[in-house]
Image 1 (cartoon, rainbow, N blue to C red):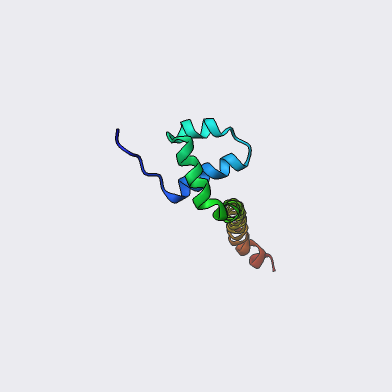
Image 2: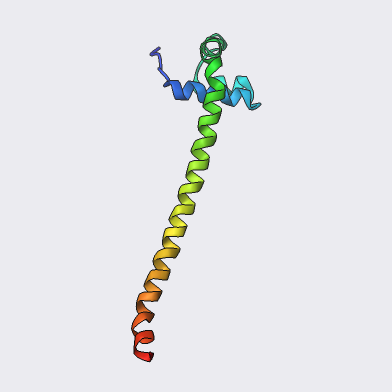
Length: 94
């Protein structure tokens, strides 16, 4: 059987899933690993779990902020277009 190598991020994600309450047996099946391998990962990466959780939270926050920026830029462009269309009438009326 060929061994499948997971990236560090995938390993940390699997460990994070176990920390958030997911069943460890389910995680083993999803990633195709044994309990022994999972325990070895846990011993190796235990100090990185808090950093991983913080990184995941920062990525989610960054995605939300990006969507806010996109919405604000869209609103800004709509206002600029509206003002550009109504500018000549305001000048002619003066």
